[in-house]
Image (cartoon, rainbow, N blue to C red; front, side):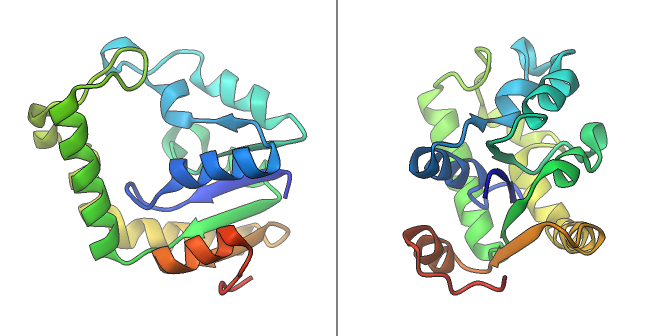
Length: 174
């Protein structure tokens, strides 16, 4: 596991797992949201080149997202995909809780951006996106796994499986 991609819908825990793998295995973590969002939530023009640059390296961990911009670039370069295929109820609880906390504490996210309750009305807000794209994202991830047979895919279907896997007790399909 040298080039690790964490797949799953918004709220599945991609960034949290990426951070933990980074700490445990010394993998450089490149958070795609931080690379993508410039001030005022405007996409950074360097995003794609930054991703290409770090993904050329021998070791990294990152989240599987921004396919409209990146296509299968990260899948093509990864050796392992950890797929957080959690139930919708778990994902929705997490993404709503995260959004509420961010809106209440107003802590800066990436490049000074802050989440507000007003943001929840946007069609691309993670709460709305996670709900509307849940099934589609699952199908797309399965399709990518089929198209990339040389990539080891570890599919974790519950938060409990993910915790056990991280501790070294793998219940997952490999």
